[in-house]
Length: 254
Length: 364
Image 1 (cartoon, rainbow over the protein chains, first blue to last red):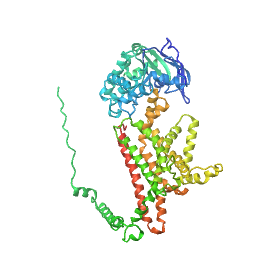
Image 2: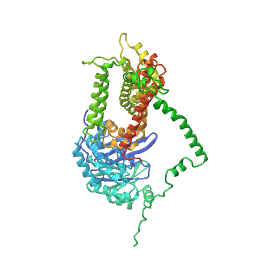
Image 3: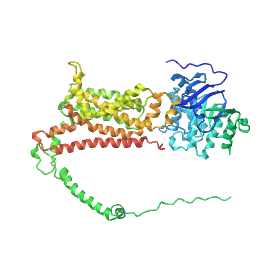
Image 4: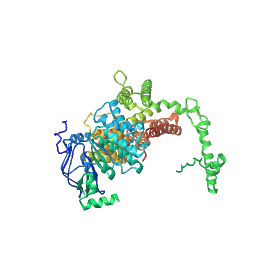
């Protein structure tokens, strides 16, 4: 089979969404989404539940299929072609709300699985890289335990390390702290801040507005499947333009 | 600032101890329980002593003919004398060592897989699974320098084990493929798998065996025939794979959607997602169900009598019909039951061991 068709990454950005529409049956979840993300940019998506923010980032690695419009990630257009999809998934790491670690594998095996089977890396090399990232998320001592033996915060840090082991160019975070006990939120956010400082391109769906303020280059507010407003965090929080944004901010910032 | 000191752990409260206290709590706690206990003791007294005297104390253990069975109890001489038939059927006596070698090879070959530290286990296991069936077939059936033994002469426990192991080894992979197919996104594959499963689950095994031996030859061209045992084996595999498929599908459905998504998001394709992430978890979850199916399969092997094959149970039946051993049916059936029980209980214990061994404590 042929390799994925790759075009040079456009100066517009490493991620381009052009006029993306999506429906669940009759329900129009994404309405004409246009979004360009430059390399190294850190984007926070927020909005009320059901606004389509998770769906948006899940379209970027084809966990959800869009029905209209174009999505180009790292120069590869997402089509029904499995080669294209897999080429994109290799370059895009994802962290989920419920961690989704593989419970039958140890922490180390969780981290080496994709590098060994997708990148065809030899086991020793994959383990070296895995230990490097586990050290970065500060839990190398847990490498030989199973996910079920770790706390929620630790599991989510492993999930971040697991995604990093593929050396992705883009990281997607889908409400990474929403399922955590309050006392564990900080350790995960700290890990993400460290990642941001290294220049990773990040798209993060979160309700952690403090994190958005310190880390994001741009905050995107979505409601009812549309991008309502986007702005750098200071403008967004201190001077929101639309009524809908003001209402949302007043509700979550108390 | 005050420092909080935690209270020390206390031992849990202790209830009454000792045998008398235990009996008072569990057997004689009120008048109804006392009555039930006494009734149970009466039942045990009624059943156990006669059973023991029949099977052991009053039983006949030595001799060569029916006339040697002079005592009241069971005549185990019958089992002793016909043991060869029960184990090998009509397999020629001078060639029975080949069956023994096949069994020993299986035991020796499988043993390393139970040693935790054995290197390259997966590699060895796959090699064993490829080579052993060929060797076993050669030893049992003959050819290449060994005298041929037609499958119509196979019988007894040996035949039971052949049908059960081939049935299990064939039905498990086929069942897994069918289960995956039934959940496939491709409509054509899904329809084929659903039809297959529902067809084979809808017909009784007896019908399958009967059709394979009576009806199938009618549809084959003149002069073409293939082995009766082979037809029965194929029938058993197809039949049981439908059951295995449904058990495995239960496991696949129990895996949270997030696992599929996480595997997909990493770039693992369909087969690697299934093989590395989903199936290891799903199969582990359905071990009890799969073993249940296999135990049923093991016992269903006796149905091959319908096509004139003599497994353990049918060999016993046949031997009991011998005029020289009239009236020995009870001993024969007790023996057959014991052998079946040993194998089925073994499978059950092994599945429990496997569940414990594979448990990684991820109950959510």
